[in-house]
Length: 193
Image (cartoon, rainbow, N blue to C red; front, side):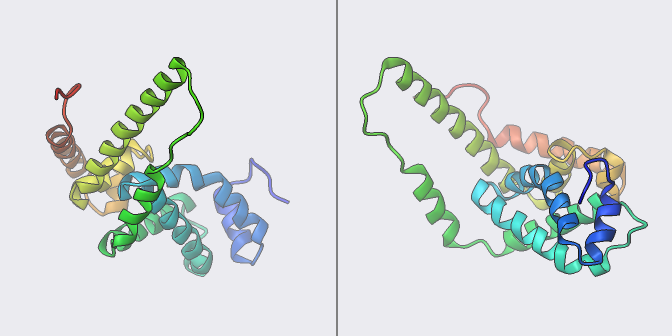
């Protein structure tokens, strides 16, 4: 039995001893935050789920390498970051095909004006989020990683620097450059046409 107040490190220690319920508690606790990170890194939710699954599988099989004297979440984030990098190097046509299937969904029932407006707003929001995800995914890893670690995962500059093996000042500079690049990639305001 697991407790919500039990620390990640205590759960990881129990999971190392083979207790699946302890590992399942860690997955439940961290899957949403890690998915937000990997989804933005990869540029799509589908790819994010694949990487998230790979992350937890690797964590389960790599628990013997986890040092319980160290915080668990940075160890898990490192695995997720490495899985993102690996997946980014192996991008395939599958990504494009999966996106095409998710986009093609149309309702055939008659709609009211309010339903039409809501669908247009949802489509517009989905489009803006998709463009943001693609813009973030297009950033070089040097800028993308600190941006996602600080804005999506909520790490401080020091924590991100420790994870990326650099300095907080370097993180600050990379974040500024990432924001400038995103401003160049994303139009400011509605487009005319």
